[in-house]
Amino acid sequence: MNLNITVIPGDGIGPEISRVGVKVTEAVCRRFNHEVHFTFALAGAAAIEAAGDPFPEETFRACCEADAVLFSAIGDPKYDNDPKATVRPEQGLLAMRRRLGLFANIRPVQTFDCLIDKSPLKRELVEGADFICIRELTGGMYFGEKYEDNERAFDTNDYTRGEIERILKVAFDYAMKRRRHLTVVDKANVLASSRLWRRIAQEMAPDYPEVTTDFMYVDNAAMRMIQEPRFFDVMVTENTFGDILTDEGSVISGSMGLLPSASIGEKTPVFEPIHGSWPQARGLDIANPLAQILSVAMMFEYFGLKDEGKLVREAVDASLDACVRTPEIQAEGGPRYGTEAVGTWIADYIDKH
Ligand code: IPM
Ligand code: MG
Image (cartoon, rainbow, N blue to C red; front, top):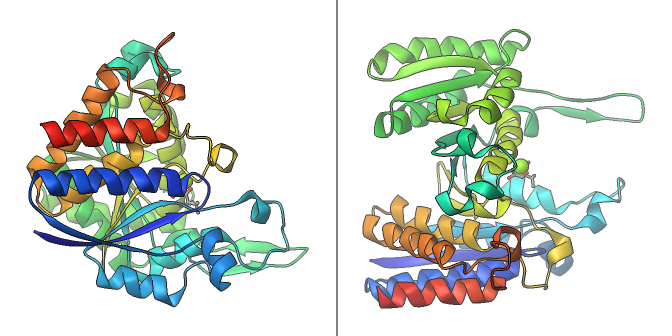
């Protein structure tokens, strides 16, 4: 296969983990004889500094022309602490989602046996947890009408039938491929937008008779996720709820540095870790590259290249078993590996297997 990949390293630890993502992609392509070509593009604070725009036209074009985008992270505290800032790095991420029509964000939450004790939750609760959160990514409060002055501000949680139907379809299809259990997470006891979600899900459920569909209020889902994570198979929810619940989900795995994601929609799909730019760790070679590497696995799987994805996952498991781990998941007294060394180990494993 001939792959054209646009790489957006972004800010903070982004460039470090991005280098690892590229290295692992190259190793897979070498191993399976795929032709790969990378184009590098700017977004976030890096793009504000270089071009005054967090998602420049040139980056948009590079995304549109690629088969996939490998994205790392954006964000910079310089902008967080300045409420008067008129452009922010995060606007680059939102612009990318909107302009590429990336309405479905697939965030798998899985556990790794050898890391169970890294989760602050009890072993018997998290063992075997394995679910996918499907987060709507281009609607809701993130993109609805907004207003802000010194006395009043609002965001509108706007959803249309079309937007809800297309994300629910993705969710039902995922449920069919998995354990056939779909949980629709909403706040239908309070929010009109949630009632529309629920009504449409109820209309669509009979088309998927093999899927057990249940409904859960988001506050209850937040509790259930850590009380009984094994309950979930596929969860689908709106943009804001999905943002919050997936950070919570990372606690189940034991580290935010483990969770990858895929964003798919109308144009080029984007593969990115769910963690942010972690500016404090920038340049320290301590960031965990596994979420980025697992995003690479998701990218190959998206192209239908199952063996490629499988080998990447196998290499990740092997690195964990061999205690080739970044500090936050290292076993007590285990060796010290940096971001780059973990990446090199995994790329070597792929070369040899
Ligand atoms: C995420 C992030 C983003 C979001 C931020 C950086 C805008 O938290 O991808 O979950 O809120 O969607
Ligand atoms: Mg988030």
